[in-house]
Image (cartoon, rainbow, N blue to C red; front, side, top):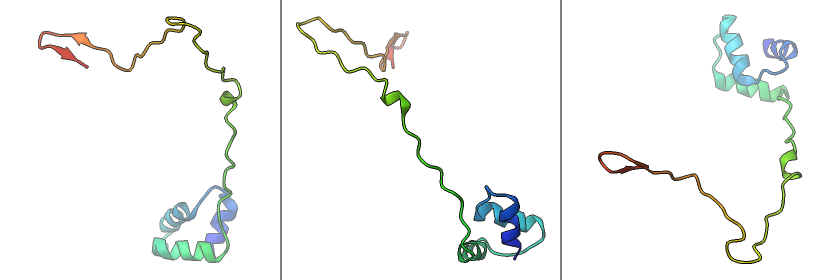
Length: 89
C-alpha cells in the first residue's frame, strides 16, 4: 500500500505525517485508519536512546561547613525593587 512506500522513502515519518502526506496526494482516509494500517504493517519509528548526562560526572561534592559563617550562599530567585507604590517582586 501507499503507506509502506512513504515510510520507505521518508524514514522519520510517523503515522501522523504519513496521514498528512496521503491527504496531500488526494487520499481521503481517516487518521485512525492510517494509524491502524501503519500498526498492522509493523511500521514504527526507531526510538531514540536516552543519553547519559555528562554534567553529572563533573559535579563537585557539596562543601561541609566547619564553623559558623564558613560557607556563604546567595539566593537570587527573589529580588525586590523599590517603586512609588511599594515593593514589587
